[in-house]
Figure 1 (spheres, helix red, strand yellow):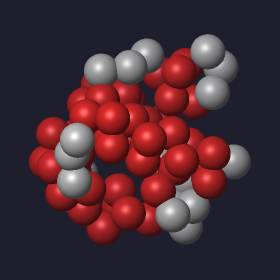
Figure 2 (tube, rainbow, N blue to C red; figure 1 turned 90 degrees about the horizontal axis):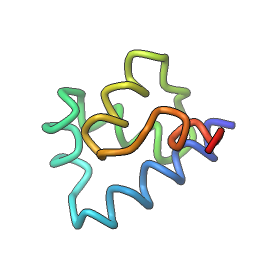
Figure 3 (cartoon, rainbow, N blue to C red; figure 1 turned 90 degrees about the vertical axis):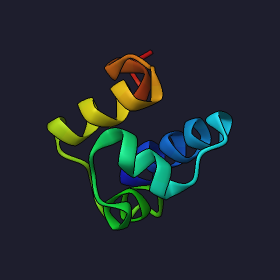
Figure 4 (cartoon, helix red, strand yellow; figure 1 turned 30 degrees about the vertical axis):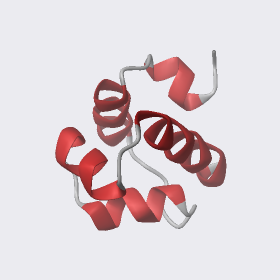
Length: 67
């Protein structure tokens, strides 16, 4: 499951034309955390998913895979 959410984060980030550092800045997270999530090395906790969804302009359910 971490890979699936990571793949979605990466796809949405690239759709915006942002680097990992730019998404990290917009989500107020560490760039290394963004990288770990995208690579499936870390599973984001609920607060991180909310930050990522807000920064990427998508619903939480879309990012989690429920939509």
